[in-house]
Image (cartoon, rainbow, N blue to C red):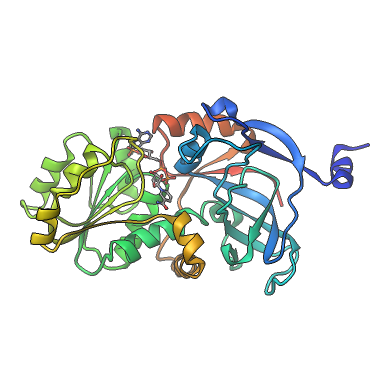
Length: 339
Ligand SMILES: NC(=O)c1ccc[n+]([C@@H]2O[C@H](COP(=O)([O-])OP(=O)(O)OC[C@H]3O[C@@H](n4cnc5c(N)ncnc54)[C@H](OP(=O)(O)O)[C@@H]3O)[C@@H](O)[C@H]2O)c1
């Protein structure tokens, strides 16, 4: 019996999953039961799965210990394979992009609550859509909702050449930011970041003095910070009056910072945060509004999902090694299947 026929009869699928936390080697190719869409869910047959830094954190156990086999993966593109009860507006075979709040992207199939699934316009290819569902609403939520970037702002973006960074710069520009400064951990990433539309890209070492110099001592209106630790502390010193710093990650895995409240309130500065998982749990309609806004910006050609690499999914451990080392550039998507 051919494997594919056997798989269909047995309703099993392949996935990369972990049942313990650790290095990239804990991601193992497994055969598990097909997910079944419950009420309010759809089943997506995956073509591409985006790779996110948060999945390396998931693998390492940053969000808690593995409980049985867990399939990481926060975003994917593909086609609707089945529709759960109570779901309207989808058809079998429809191309979609999805955010996966309960993970599951490193697999052939995933069941996901319908509000997190977006039917794709015709011109939106599945490759770019694979790197959309988590990264695009995050970039929009951070830039627009949390940092309130508006016309004339000078914006500083850390991890400027990353998945979120590569979109945040374009969205900030679309919202009228007049000066975009990025920092990167490795000077080798400068040229890639420059192509994304930054006015200035700096190696992160010594960035604070460079930013002050570049802004004539004024500092910046907005800082977008997924790094944390000393980078966050130094960034707070760069906020101009009315400035906003948004924390949305802790890539440096450094101890939390203490806020200089006196300096914040005396100068109308704000420090805030953004978290897509929390947003999706409490306000899924906001996730959807943000995602649809970016989809529209992409359709109008204002913003581009810049997929830097498409990698066969059996090389997912190599990608995770590079995520751990902070050496990836741009958005990476895994090719799971031709649909
Ligand atoms: N809050 C949310 O809802 C949310 C949602 C999505 C993503 N995020 C966060 O946003 C950030 C970007 O996510 P992404 O998936 O697009 O990843 P990414 O930016 O493509 O990759 C992570 C980047 O973090 C930087 N980094 C700094 N210190 C690091 C360290 N010690 N180890 C590894 N990398 C380090 C590296 O860039 P440099 O070389 O420039 O330092 C690295 O390329 C991550 O911190 C992620 O956790 C948050």
